[in-house]
Length: 137
Image (cartoon, helix red, strand yellow):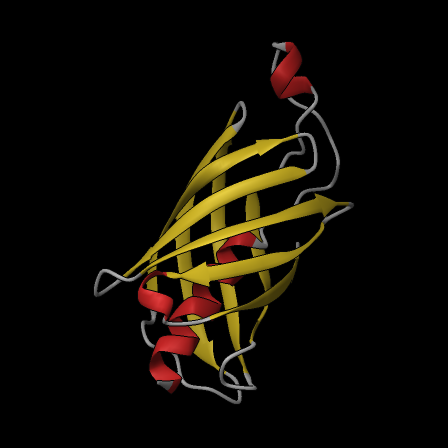
């Protein structure tokens, strides 16, 4: 169970990717979106298991879409997976995304980013875990 929670936390952490509120691109939708490109670090806090994992990801953004890599290191909980992939979209300060961990677990995340900080909620497949995340650039 602790491994599943850590996996979910990792997904949540990915969702926490935030931006500095800056714009980018030439279309009106991308100029209204936060720039979340770069490396983010933070924590995913499990509501199921009462602990946290340390998470990080590197994000590349094109318009309102982003892709990247997810990384996990143990906190008070162990990681289910040391890494995975993240994809999603950012519109204004609102983002949605999915993290697919090594081993196939998928976590969805929602949240907001502003000034190089991000936070929100996550939920993993098969009710493996759920909780909150916070990240900074």
